[in-house]
Length: 179
Image (cartoon, rainbow, N blue to C red; front, top):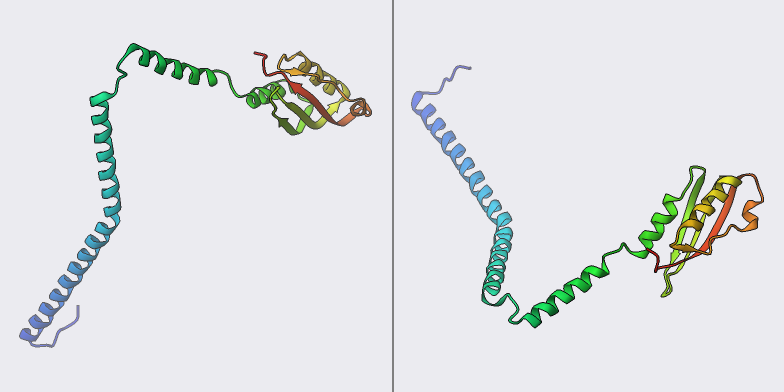
């Protein structure tokens, strides 16, 4: 510390003014923090309040008349729910086709594109890729032919022209009635 040559009453006055400014600075910072916090939390308060009111209204509606009045209405409600569940009992057709195409894939065959065109009768599938050998392509085609979901799978003769790294395109139909 240095030596303060000011007389003690002036020193006290300067220290007093310093502490007053310091307290004013802290008070201003605290007030700014409170104002900013209020502005930031106000929207979430109103949203949560609206959610609580909606939940209370929903509970009140359930307590007053949530159950069907007669067994016919109950049966109709169950029938509707069962029909919805039956709609989603099996995976979508595209998912089943993708599963059939990819699980049959031998290690030497690589697909570059899969095109599924849905229709009322099931749809068409087109696969393009490269087979390492002719036998890999024939094995893949045989595996696809064994799948009941797929029909009309055949290898074009042009795809068998080479012996290694054979580009191919297979086109076949989908049987949506298969399990």
